[in-house]
Length: 201
Image (cartoon, rainbow, N blue to C red; front, side, top):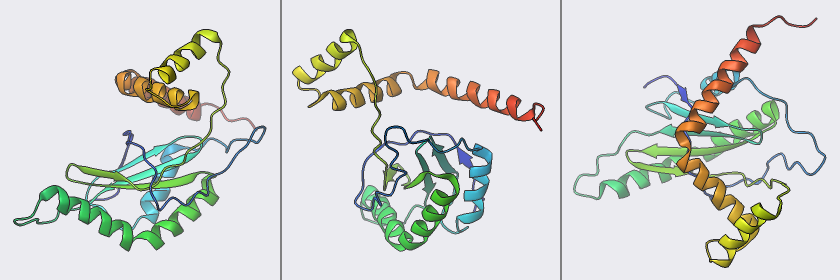
């Protein structure tokens, strides 16, 4: 088995039935959790995850609200069966057999970092995210921006302004993926430089 390695890789969302619904639940005026060092988070998960769970790189994606951990599973021998169905079955088995352990790790991570933990697995070309946290984001929009959302609603693309805003964010994420990746790399470089700077007493 390979050691646990972490890579910044976006993973498609979705809300699964295993969702614990125990996120930070920050409302208006409540403080966000403090920033975390990504290397420290990666190291902590590398130490907590059982060695036999995954066979390849573990994707770790984090923001102010959530930490998403996605691991790659060994491909099953489908024989004469459908390979995609076999991979989906392997993911389902992993999800069921590791539920209690994942819950314990998620609870410990939430207490340590103040963020919910979402899990996912990949097997061959089949990828599934078990849980995600849906977080309300408050914003103020002027009329031109509101008209964009209303157009999406009137055209049937979305059912509400909030759904239209989420649709627009996903669209930007897909079309500007390279640019967003470069921006994240630049921010990581700034954080590294800042960490090497003199520390206040």
